[in-house]
Length: 73
View (cartoon, helix red, strand yellow):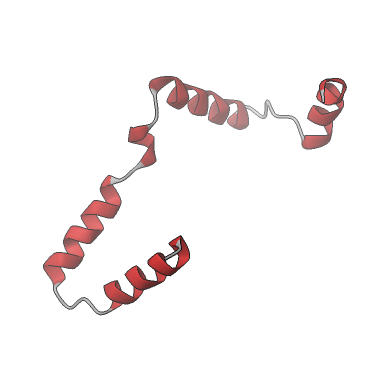
């Protein structure tokens, strides 16, 4: 069974659940699986730095980056 079929079956199963406690547990499970907690501190720091650069408008568009690095590609 491929991943899309598995997802479809899970969605179908979830729509038929009538037990509110089970739905609450599934919601809690979904909320707890935050990728932010799974990445390293270095990765978090890099993301934060990127967000700060974005806020400070320290960005380059694709064409600028391409022209800078074209000689290496």
